[in-house]
Amino acid sequence: MRRITLAALVLFAPTTLLTAQSPAPPAFEVASVKLDPKQGRGAARPFADFSLPIVRVLPGGRVESHGHMLRNLIAWAYDVNTLYQKIEGKREILETELIISAKAAAPSLTSAEAKAMVRTLLEERFQLRWRLQPRDVDGYLLMPAREDGRPGPGLRPFTGDCDARATNAAVRFESPEYEQKARCNWTGMNGRQRGVGVSLMAIAERLTFYMATPVSDRTGWTGLFTFDVLADTAGMPFQAVLRPAIGLGAPTPVDAPQLLDVFRSEFGLKLVKDRTKVDDFIVERVEPLIEN
Image 1 (cartoon, rainbow, N blue to C red):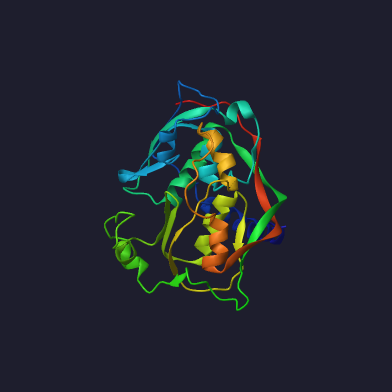
Image 2: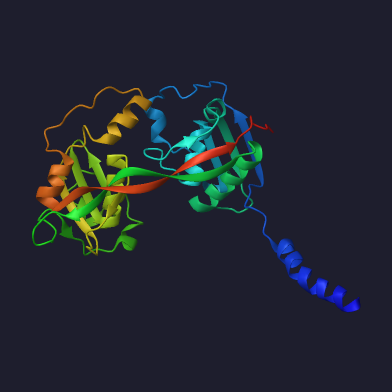
């Protein structure tokens, strides 16, 4: 009998130890979650509201969000791209608009740390339980368009240092010094598209936004690129999704060719349709807000 008892202790001790050592989920030191008294219930929001992020990560370990739906907070915290991924569940709760003010114990937070803490907050205050459900959608592959498989003349190799530029002061979009001093990014304004130090993966990510469906880089082109072209994004799929959400009418066309035509003629790139999978966010349980 003594041997059996010792064996049982040996078997159960590791499990007990692992349970005791399981870290608590990251959480804010203090957090206030309240219902926004306006409660627009998913109605179109003023364009100015979209100039601010859904969740602001501020100095001092503070996090704030004002007037955004629970659905959008979920999208931010769990990295759900609502242009092509669905968030499904109790609509009356998911469209509840909230005011969040929270502070972590740490003096500063990265975006990833803040997202983890917001996830914990939502799961506690709304009893949120969820799962991912795969779904097949039409996506695109970003492929070389030229017979020689090389970039076109409008896509030039970048020889600068993006890390060194990260601390540069902002440079005006129209400045002749933009390419020499601007931080690495792709920026578009009034039909002009300027890219500095962007990879093909970053270009595919931007096209994912414009096409409102996944775009994957299949060029095999390495390195970073610079470009400065006239190209219009009016009429691209993202417009049909976003403009109604912010109460805007049809976009004003500009005197520039369509972006995808420029991609083929100037960049030597094309989009090829492809079936791919996305994960929809299925809310299995969500309860009304447990207020402070």
